Image 1: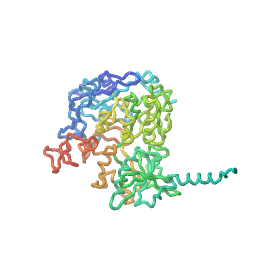
Image 2: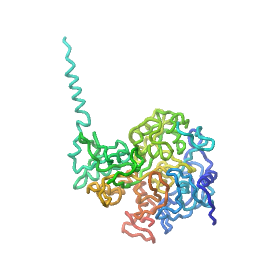
Image 3: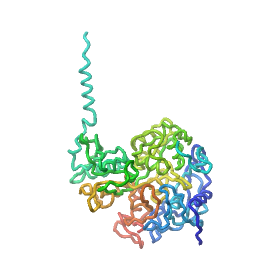
Image 4: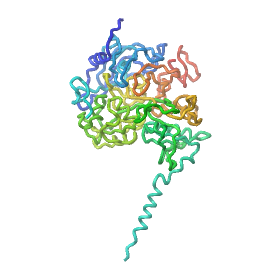
Length: 148
Length: 392
């Protein structure tokens, strides 16, 4: 499998395009959705490959099956490619593997960067917030205007 | 008939008011058994309540005395011109009952400070003061929340920017009523973290200052228009009030969906924090004066701070890990990810003292892990820790 360079911004876009199409209607949300990945891991995972399965959550909305995730190995130290410059913004240039973006739009390989952790496939319920639909002051390019 | 003179009534009323004030009735803090004084954020108050009760119940009791005027007071108490604790402070009996005691009129120097953020986030602090140590404790989440009657399910970092940076003019329906947008002040760790995540300077928040985590919750819970109300506070405070408020899923910049700290709205597993899906969390910071070895110089403070760092071994009387989990915190041993600094990048971690199974059992009441009452696990690689076969 050949890893292709991809910025986190592009990863986020790819994930967004592939993400569940269920979005909340303004002003209320459509309720939580479950991104079912089958054997999602939420417990600490060691090299032994043991996986803690949190079990399936209540399916209250659209379900995206991302397939079975790879069993990630947990590094004891920070990954070498942690290059996020901003403290709270994950949109930094970090190589990613497009082959790890599942059909469901989540990140299906072992996460090692902030964006990958945030978008990692999981069985946990999530509830999207549609910025484009609900934020009338959002700039055309998706940016934020200065504070008044 | 002659009218009665009013002066005696006024005097009696004044005397009654004086006698009924908390200060007049509060015991002198310095008369309590082996007091340890702390100050800082209100987020940590429930945690110190649990430890305070346990320490008060020891054969040689200690009294944890804590005041929570705001997170940054936790470091302001250790600067070159330290802010002293004044007025009344809370302490807890062995039964866990909170009471108040009166601090010295001239003020009391704190033995430890506590807050959810690092010192550098506080106004006027450019470096950790000399001779002061910063010790990391368990994880706290920072939660946006709404009344249970609200239909809202999630909020994004951009939405938070408009709600709290613009107020009603941000036009983020349904949060368009400034009186129902509940905030804190710039000394609050909750506001500091929301500001960091959303890109709002802590001093420029719009809305109503609730003063404490607890009051943020009560103001939102009692909002006349539930749909328009929103606030933020520490997760353990919000979790303790799920009957009246509900945590929103949070969708950070670059994230394609919003997540709550827990895997579902009704669970307490903190799964999304532990595996890196939930962005708004930090480790608790405790501050204390240290010696040349970097440890708290006062033995009693060293022992107390050590409970949270792991330097003080947990015992049956003070089961540190269990107390932290039951309070809604996450010990580092249950985290799969970690970060350095305030909302720093996430990275994988495999804690040496893995307690993932134990966390699930204490936090949710059940675990799929195998119990190991005999102290051993049959599966190769697994380790018996705290009664359960952990993955390693």
